[in-house]
Length: 66
Image 1 (cartoon, rainbow, N blue to C red):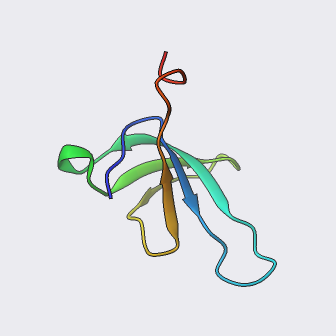
Image 2 (tube, rainbow, N blue to C red):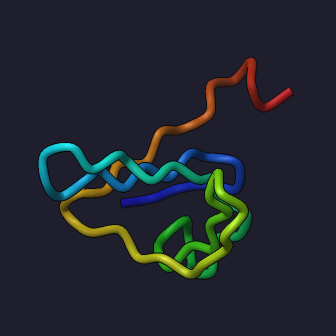
Image 3 (spheres, rainbow, N blue to C red):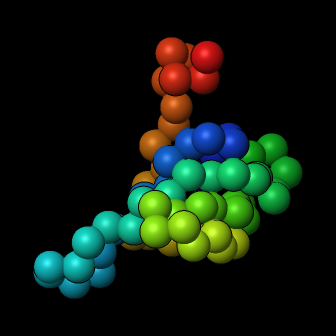
């Protein structure tokens, strides 16, 4: 899984009724876009994350990068 700064990090809820945790990748700590990533979540929490099977990276579009 590869990402760039500004991509969206989405960790899906693991049980019914649990909401997804959504954040923005603020730093790519691995080489070539590989994990781990420093992520700022919508609640303000910042953490170092390595994506698992319940995680999705939503890449920015060319328009959003401007």
